Amino acid sequence: MAKVSPAGAIRRWIAVVVYALALPIFAPAMSHAQSPENVKQAMESLKAKTVKLGVPGIKGEDAVAGKPAPALYFGATKMNNNFAVVDEVKKEHSGTATLFVKNGDDFVRVATNVQKDDGSRAIGTVLDPKGKAIAAIRSGGAYYGDADILGKPYITGYEPIRDASGNVIGIYYVGYPKTK
Image (cartoon, rainbow, N blue to C red; front, side, top):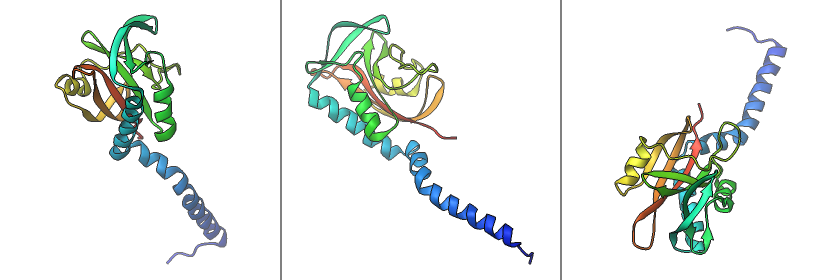
C-alpha cells in the first residue's frame, strides 16, 4: 500500500469537500436541462398561462421581425412580439419557451425567449419544416423529445395550439439546452 503524504491527504480532502459543496449547487441545473418531466411541467405552465388569457384565435396580421405574420391572440391579448408569458415560463422553469403561429405551411416564432447567435430573440424564424416536431403537429399530435433549434441540441416539447373550432393555428414549445 502506497503512503500518502500529509500534503497529498489534505489536497484529496479539499477536493472531496469542494465536490461535495459544488454538487448540490450545479447538479440540479445540469439534470434540469435533460429532464423530460421538467419539459412536461414547463409545458403545462405555458398552456395554463395562455388559457387564463382566453381562447386562442387569429385576428388579422402583425409584423414579426419585419415580416407579416398572422396575429395570434389568447382572448384579447395579442402574442406577436409580446414576451411576458414566455419570459414568465423561463423565470419559473428555466429553459426556453415559444409561441408559434401557423403561416401557410410554416410555423413562425411570434413570442420566444430562444436566442439567435447574436443574442437577440429568434422571433420571425420558422420551425424546422423537416423536423420530427412539425411532422407530429401536422398529424394532430404532440412531440416530446430531442430537437435541434437553430443548430443547437435541446430536449423539447411541442403541442398544437387549437382555435375554438379545433383547427391548429399555432404551436406551444418549451425546451432545455442539452448538456454535453
